Length: 293
Ligand SMILES: Nc1nc2c(c(=O)[nH]1)N[C@H]1C(S)=C(S)[C@@H](COP(=O)(O)O)O[C@H]1N2
Ligand SMILES: [Mo]
Image 1: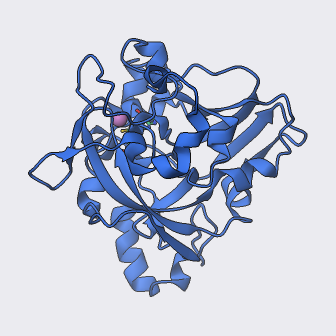
Image 2: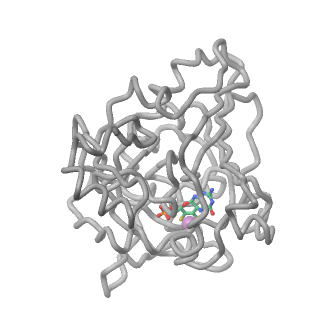
């Protein structure tokens, strides 16, 4: 019997079956991912995998860092469908395998910065969002892209308690969505995503605060108007739409000038656009920097 994961990769092709079966008891469908290229955007050391997979924000499972790894036993990331619709010529609902098939995974080592003041360096396995969006033939009227996370009360204790206005939603302006640094990730550290990191498919936008990186995506919609993202909906004083990392603009609860890299003792200075300014700043020319948050 071949056991295939959501990506259609047979694990028994990669590891000896006995090892796989043993591992499977503990890790459900964690599977090694083949990647075709590597883009490293920082000389900073990688954050250890144990930290990346345990220090997470995923409010559908609770508001504490360990909640999504502890409280997600009932969550099923397969089978999985993604709907792409709105202002485009070819809307449709596709199985995850068909979403991923035309897009070979690349390793992208990105700095990540949460608005709470911590940061990480993560080797993602993903592909440019632009490549996916183009397949759906977005119309000229589409100015923004809206993303929606799965909402399953029976599998998600944070959803049952209504700790945020779910389903979790996010948005990007079309040029941000099409930017070559913007990826959809299906894995990290060479393995399929664990639930807590947004299995089976999540957004990664390295010049923005972490909350833009919406997890467990089920819908991508082309829209004309700027969408309302969940954190802005919950608390517009703290959270904006653009959420570009900006050390000059403090939020009511955190100065954004410095950050603590997980695993390090000393604080680091936060860089404008999280250090990606040379690649992305031109998209915001002429805009009020206050609005960038
Ligand atoms: N659906 C969903 N996506 C989400 C969140 C969430 O609560 N729900 N939290 C966001 C926040 S605040 C951060 S910092 C990143 C964290 O991603 P990581 O846990 O994989 O590092 O996920 C983002 N995506
Ligand atoms: Mo965050």
